[in-house]
Length: 529
Image (cartoon, rainbow, N blue to C red; front, side, top):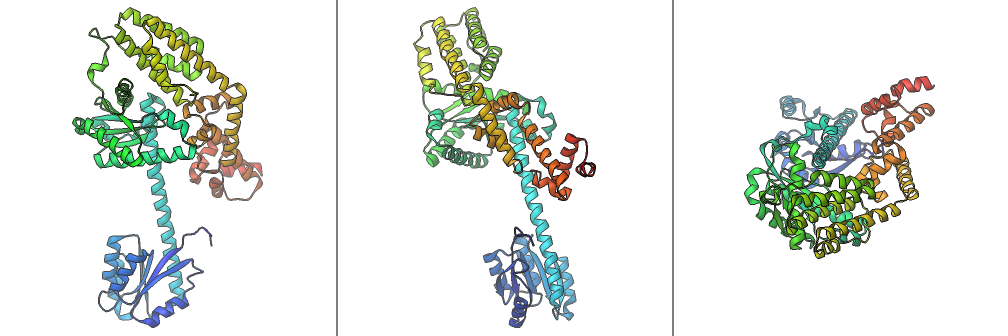
């Protein structure tokens, strides 16, 4: 018997004490890995006992004074239909026994009791409970995986990456087609908090806030909630709540402050329709949050149409130049970044913006670039507040561009120094070693990134550069190599190999194995043997 097999609770119900004593003594409960949770002499006592002990199985006489076994079963199953009933019935009670089966009893046994037959019946009931438990676990796993995959899908669309995930469109929530708006929740002063919190404490704080935000969102009618960047959460609301943005934001800020003493700000996007507009929704919510850097306070910020342009002549924000600058941060390309700052300067001069308009555009660009550094975990002792003060102190466009060149240029050089070739190799070696020792577990990229102390995007870039593989490709190769070794050198059954190398589904394992090796596990073993 497996040491990890569940221990199920049983209650015995009979109005005859001698039968209760016989059942307790004649059945090897401990050997069967079952626990007698209690005994009852009638249906009323049994019902109370069921509610107190939550048994998995009830073995009961079918005819008792007061509430009989069938009415007891109906009441118990109405509260939990997964409990199993085995009835003991006299010869003259066959019609009762047949009715009990129709009403959902697992089985019945005629008196006088044949204990061997009862043991066989109990073993069948146990196998049924085991299957039931496995099905529940599988269903829970599928629900969790579906939720995680849906969050991942939404996150990819928010990032603007649509094509790689077209095969996951089945996870899309049709509610988004009815119209929605996005709230982006950001912890205030997160950079300072991030420096103060040890890793375990940070994980607890972020977990606690996610629970608060998720529960609050559910109560308010939100469509979905998930963390996006560290210290940031995304909530999607149906358009029917769009006139409540201010009150929703204030209520959420109050909930987080009451429960954690931490302050946050909430930015609301314009209304959108469809999953393809998640990226635009996110951008408008984050742009709304830029106002926080002018007010310097926590608050609720709602995107308005007046913020789409910078003047009456509809001067557009230089989105393409911003994306090129973000790529410079991602690749730590200082030379190209300095060139692009000159391009920004030329663009602003051509538009003949006022100082206030140019300043606003530069501040927004600065915040976006700063967030990219922060997201890559490249921040040193750099202060957003200090940088903005330098920008505000500049009296000309030339001075403002010079501040950007000096600060961001210096940060890229320092980042390169802090991530020398040797450091990168050491970090990736640490990650690959961790994968080699934990490939058999349910290993996530988030877990490895936390070990490497890198953001997911930065880790993926460095990992691919160093190993030539994506994280998933490397993990899969590692698992298949281990599986090949097991198949060659042991007699472990093929279906048992899967969980040994990190796959819970043997069929999926076989599919992956054949895709990598060109052979099924059985074919590989035969040829290797």
